[in-house]
Length: 304
Ligand SMILES: NC(=O)c1ccc[n+]([C@@H]2O[C@H](COP(=O)([O-])OP(=O)(O)OC[C@H]3O[C@@H](n4cnc5c(N)ncnc54)[C@H](OP(=O)(O)O)[C@@H]3O)[C@@H](O)[C@H]2O)c1
Image (cartoon, rainbow, N blue to C red; front, side):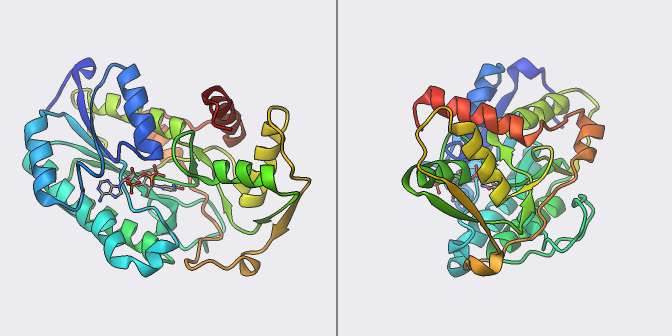
């Protein structure tokens, strides 16, 4: 395994234009890492030759895979593409990393679980995905695990940020246009700010850069505390209302059964993050504080 001094660390970020990838590139550069950004249309994770070429020619010390097919409902009718991006791509990436003796940080999801557990999910809990997206991500995890010892699989949940499309931006948009919103109140999870997740990943990268530190395996990272999509929406509206004009007056709770979607979703998505805290000393921030920072960032960017 290659060891390196952190300031010279060259990191390949795949999925660099996504909400997480964008934060990784921006913050990685701010922290002094040398970032090699890759995404569609120039780089396709389903193209084995593109992966091999990028890895062999980059002289990198670490690969982070933030790319994914993330359209949960569309995946139900596009299983082939979802599996190509979320399983076959990571499998090929892990193989190339193994051939070049590079570690891989691979991002995964709470949707590998079926949500029937009453308590927060541990890394050791058996996966049992409900839909194609979760299945393809669980298969991707398995491929990475069996192909490359030097991996970190980091599962996260309910991801939102200032870049890209997400629940926060959708709720702000519909809150400007409608007096009443109807939002699901029987799915529980932990909203995660992409900026916080990016910082956690870069902190892991720093740890991996230290000689002799090789804590390979699967970890969880998400915002601290839990809520429902309805509770998340109430907080979004409360925090944004002093700054922007919102038409919304009522946020009505609805059940999952009243809001049918092509893909089934877990009722409990809460992830236990204590293993990450114990191993890397990385502790998530309360989700409400992070949401407040994200709304401030959107206001500064002028995008709400
Ligand atoms: N979003 C969530 O709520 C959530 C929750 C839990 C876990 N996660 C996981 O967190 C990670 C980051 O998610 P995110 O929300 O940042 O995703 P995202 O915003 O959808 O970004 C994914 C990026 O990957 C790119 N991509 C898609 N197919 C590709 C391919 N064949 N080759 C190369 N790049 C490709 C996408 O490009 P295009 O936009 O052009 O397709 C996009 O730039 C993923 O592993 C995801 O599964 C997300």
